[in-house]
Length: 257
Image (cartoon, rainbow, N blue to C red):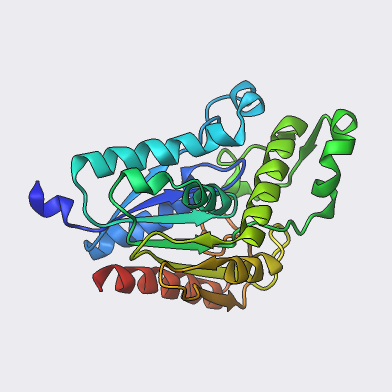
């Protein structure tokens, strides 16, 4: 309906090897508040089969974000936002740099949580050299995370991830300008074993608003990567819960402006 089309909607993009589970808690928050929608997209090549995952390029990962944005714009939604966690962030930044949004309703705002521009895992930088010898890597998951992430991560996908973040870093060095009227805020955990906190600094330095201003960056006292996702994790503290809810509330408040 016309009323629904005027309600803010966030397209939420998850990270590498993950699924839409990463943004379930934002959707739950939105359902409780009733003031905005959340459209969780599954990155291309993710969540279907190991073969699909191994063969998919980072452009394939990005395709589902583009498809959903086009659909919402074509349907007439007037207040479209994006939220990207981890690898979802450089995928969205690439869409800005490429001028993708010029053909559609411009985004009102973009929220990035623990964006990965520089990896905390320095082995990733050597994947191009070690790839054939690695074959794949594995990751330890908590019991509540089983079934929501790939445990085995083939070297082909690690190469795609490294290519994406290298391209994004170079784009940030050259400079990226947000579409007119688009707001951006970056939330970055200070103790992140996946995305180096310097990633937030590179975004702050490399992105400007259409009027030449700086984007908002906030460093958070968290020990989790993608701290807005607490479901399935071990040792979640009251402080982590409070931080998650604070960020969700700030996103909601921004969409009310």
